[in-house]
Length: 390
Ligand SMILES: [Ca+2]
Ligand SMILES: [Ca+2]
Ligand SMILES: [Ca+2]
Ligand SMILES: [Ca+2]
Image (tube, rainbow, N blue to C red; front, top):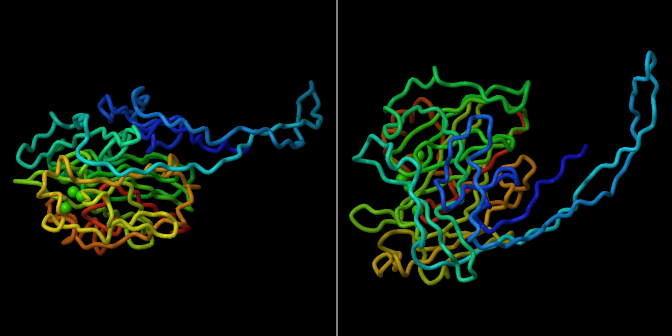
């Protein structure tokens, strides 16, 4: 039977990061990350009733195909072949208009990050809170991103919820995504947070939303062509305006690096699209959009000194650009052919943290960081790559 296309019914924007109607995003009114097992999809909670609801029925099941199949039927001691009419359900998918918004100021509702009380490194720990930001049309956006949560990957280095350097090899187990597929081991570091999918299957997430900085290992078995999809978040303390606190306001930066045992690693073969840009002056007048509608913030002021709102009551004056993520961004058959190529960055551009530097020449030897074209302003980014063969 042909597989039904994923439903694209939209329950506000809070479901935007989910793979299907079976894996809704975390409720903004509850801790976003529950702890499902490795065989389950990310944390599942119904979206809050009060969330702005843009219920857009975007597909309709249409019975439009039937075909005759030969079916072997056991009848007593003999087998006869009969013609059976099989009616297949297929769907007609209509284009979905994905929402976008320019907002002003910080989120109205703040919810604590899930490791708020668990981090043992009190010096460098920064709580990874979530916020709900309502735009002028009443749509509610989860910032810094509509993360879904789910199980965490094995620690290589984690001095927050782990004990620092970790004997990760003894903890790795293989997640079977495709029976008979190739076994892959990989290493991932994100500034600051990632959720990972391979061939549309959730394969784990970062254990620490914000800081301290940590590195993970992952092991799975999957078939080629192999599609990697990562939701990446440069976390923030002032939810909704893309800023962190370190003796004042700062527009922090992102960055993502991954290296897999089949030779796949982060480089400009990947595509990376931004869904949350902040802090911005002048309602985002500096933003550009390419011919496919992808936002480009590379022409915007991107330093603490150059962004005017940072020194002018940022919590009430800085703007953000928000764009709804397609619900199927992690799927193998998602069309990312019009997404921008990833931009490459060096470790010096991204981080000097021991959580990465300890493994720079070993687990990540010779690999580039990637992100969208703006490491500072683009705070929620999805990066994808499909590997045809090893
Ligand atoms: Ca992290
Ligand atoms: Ca940032
Ligand atoms: Ca950061
Ligand atoms: Ca950084």
